[in-house]
Image (cartoon, rainbow, N blue to C red; front, side, top):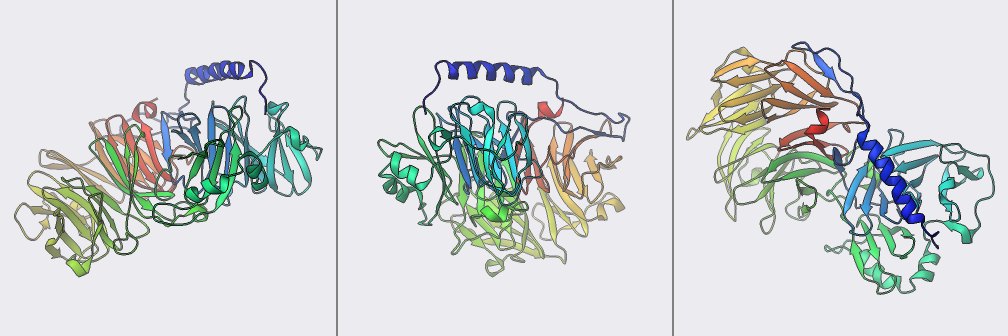
Amino acid sequence: MSERPGARRHGRTVRARVAFLRVMAPLCGVAIGATPGAVRAQASRLWRPDDRALLTDFSYVTAIAASQDMVFAATPTALVVYDRLSLQWRETAVPPLNFPGGGVVSMVADPLDDTAWLAAGAQWFEYRPLTHEWQSGLLPGGAAAVVLDSDNPTSGAWFDTGAGWVQVGPGGFVGVPGTPPAPGHRIAPLGIADLRRVAPAYPTALARIATDADLRSYQLTGAAMAPVDQQIYLATDGNGAFRLDPVGYAVEQLPSGLLAPGAGGMTVAHGRVCVGTDVLGAAGALVGASGRRGVTCVSDDLSEITPLESNPRDAAVGPFVRDVAIDERGGVWAASDAGVVRLGRGRAVRLTSAEGLPSSDARVLAADSGGVWVGTSAGLAFVDDADRPTVEGATQFGAAVGALAVSRDTLWVGSALGLLALPRGARQPVPAVGGPALRLPVVDLAVRGDTIVLLAETRVLWRTGGVWSDVGAGTPNVGRFVAVAMDGDGVWVAGTNGVAWLAPRAGTWVTMTSPDDVPQPVFDIAAAGRWVWVATAHGLVRYDKRALER
């Protein structure tokens, strides 16, 4: 398709103005009360990618499209946006709540303003990456395909529906069935016949795309051609997306995100976050579940995404990784109902009750000098970090371990019986001293120096100077508490339905509970530097704390 003279320059000028206005526009917020013990709620907002970024499994792609500047890859639960020149990931656009579980069947991109048009089930969707805004509506009889008019791509999109071709205008107006642009005047996905015409030798490249390093096979699910330079982009049902040079047939793979659609337990250390898999993910993610399990480690700036897949033959983790820890030698440990697996140091190793754990049902991990502590449904054990790790000091005490935290002289153990303490050198944990509140079932623990934070089902207990206090007044409505993370002079608390920040001195909670802000359910939370990380069934979300304070 030819480009009108000056169109690219004009499009970038308009986009720059829109982006400037968007940055300068204030983000809205609603404050309800500011007295000690009150809960201050923030309204849902429009997020910039630098403020909130979502990583999920990008490998199962149902449709693909390309504009001059961007590549769009649709997965069953998200729209992934890449920079077309560098092939770097730009953002993951979270679709509206009415996004169908079956995913996108067809997609095209406007070459002038980068707008993506999606056909999904009985609905149309429009995504504008410059303002990060979605529009959607219903289509009569569902949609099988979407095309643009190459002579006037900004006039809206044409959808092939059960009632005939229907045009949806830029403002979302759905017209009556009509006549679409002629085939020679369309911007449309590439079919097999189109691929054979523009890249006759593409089957040779397809052989490199349809098989991964573990010799697993995949199918081609979509293809698109970029304007002007006519680079080709191919999508697969589990091996991600690729760029194909139609001249030399060189193949480059686009970043493929997490190992699985959802994020389970995680840990932050040494400038990166390592997050375990939730294979099932959110509702509808089963369509694109690859079955890959393990841990994905991500750098703070999201420039490096390193998958650590477990060996399904002899070192497989369970479908949901409950916790992750990193030992002193760089080994990454994952706990699940299939035991504990060490990844990232040579061949993966799995330990279960057969190797000495109190139970193969591993619940929580804590890195310590020389290895990791493993809490199970039946007790506690220490696993060394040797090349061939062994289980030491397994202890059964009649209660499931749900939380672990290491201080200088004590391992703190959170259990269904309350908080226990295991001093250095001791063999059995003993009940912690501090009053009846410490007998509550412990959900999570956080330790920094002599300060300990205990998360119970509905309360937050804080220990400083050896004295415990209840700082959870005005408990936020974030659902069932699941995790806590210390940060500065406060703590982040994750609930199944959102996250909250607690400043104990002020006694004030700041909550974020809208599904548009925090994909739900939430499983874990961590904080380091300027970032807050939240593990959800939709993937791993990184927030800039400065944006949360606005």
